[in-house]
Amino acid sequence: MNTQILAQRLAAWRQEPDYCHFTEAELIRIFYDALDDLPCSVHFTIGEAAGIVASARLSLITPDNLPLLPYGNFQTVLSGFLPSFGLLGRLAVLPEYRGNGFATELTQRRISYARRHFPHLILLTLLRPCAISQYADLGFQDFLSYSKNDYPGLPWTETVLAIFSPSK
Image 1 (tube, helix red, strand yellow):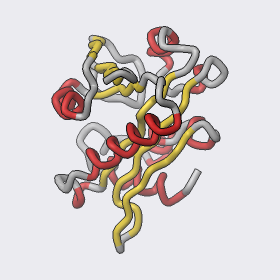
Image 2: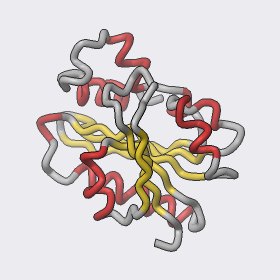
Image 3: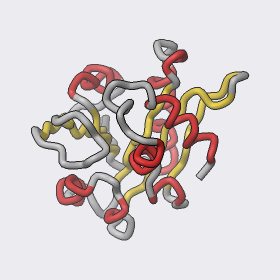
Image 4: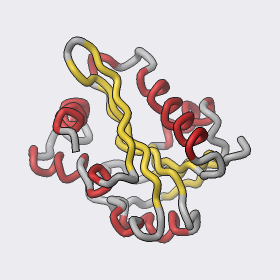
């Protein structure tokens, strides 16, 4: 994986209250996973003079790479969308660049890329409940809520699976 993207992810989340107590090694384990290095993943970035200030990933998930998902407790739920689906993940914007629409731009670019290359693909993303309205504005229409999250890298207890269907 591009080390600049990983460094940007770490810098984007290092100061967040949910993550500030993690060590550098723990943050790397949380924000870098096997999907980052596979050809089924496409990385999107926004750069400024300072370097990469925002990044996000789109991964094509198939039965072969489903076990590599870092969200082990969601594998059974996500397997219901196989034989394949697109997973939007690893969205990170440096704190000083937030509020400029970069997260929306990266999500729109990932959706556009998926529609262009895989027009019938269902897109999924895991998000915090507070982000539902932002994703609804982008065309996601189905939101399935989970009250328990056992993934050690995610500090919030409730996670929402957002679904973007091809016909939307």
